[in-house]
Image (cartoon, rainbow, N blue to C red):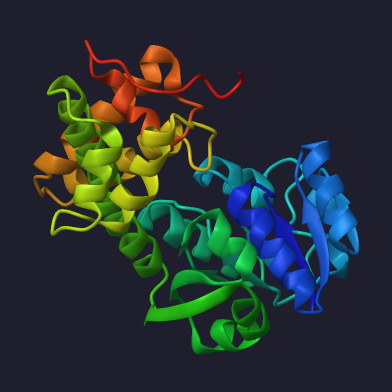
Length: 298
């Protein structure tokens, strides 16, 4: 298929490279020259800063931008692609957005003559580059059928949540509650270990071989032990995602005490200047401890 991938960040680049390897003609869209150059070198058909330049030539669109505002701009902004895509083009929105935003995008795309798959993803940059992401998707049977070649290329597991746009986004928001709380709890545990004089490597080895382990602890607290805060996923991404979680709780009148605390921790770390660091840098908000490592620029 001729597939436009919009957003060549850590996840979008991985998805685009997986599509290239699977033999699709990929059109990459990103404002950053270095990202476009990497994808061109890998074999993309064309790249550019605007999707509008390729919209009339593609058969499917995959959007992996940072937030709902960027999705809105890509589709319906001044240089939006919705009005230039061939009629009936399937659009797979894999950005993490609220269920309300997903439903709004679905309605607006339908009015523009297209179909949408509400399909957020998980797995991290490594899984994205392997074509092994987990996709939690909702949409019509026809949208799933049309986007099957894209899903086959980028995903190891596809969970078909329902036919209702918004349900995929809701599942991802709930997932991010767990992911954010696990990182925050892991950071708190490692900060306490430091204050107690326990070597971080020792604490890490104990937890990763005991019942308190989780995938997030094992992955993110390795960064803390190594003192490596090179961003894979940033503190600010979890400020955004946990903000969606707490907004969802408020909208449903449902208390989320752990998610609210984790949000405050990430927001505090961001305000302290760590917003663009790896999300494990949430540990930096704890005072009075000395941690290994330097800042990412060094």
